[in-house]
Image (tube, rainbow, N blue to C red; front, side):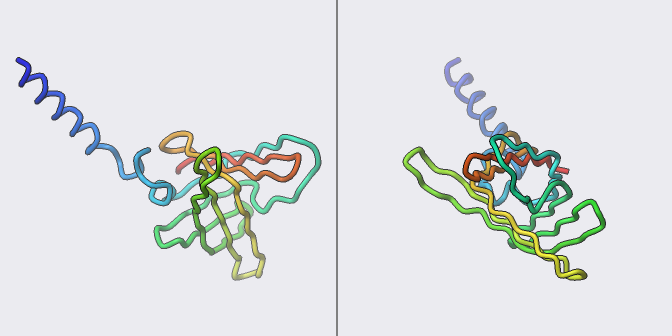
Length: 142
């Protein structure tokens, strides 16, 4: 009976971990970010104002580090992205850099997110810490 229980547990755990999608919570951040994401909301806490490069739209992140961005107003941008891992006294954080250009108009957009956190398989938040202000960008997979 003990053998049957151990075997069943082993098979169950194997199936559980091997049946997870490519974008599972076990995958590295770079792999999880690949695909199309919608910027659904931007929240600000704190005092003051800063101009933000992005306030909505669709981002498509490619494994090569390239990205496409559609701003929702007819603009189409191409550029690149990069995730960095930074070790701090409090642990490890991931940062995200996004940079793109509209080749038709020459408009350049870029943002450095001080921290990014996946809040689910199909959701992540990116933060900009700007003095007394914090901007929270909420993304959802499309």
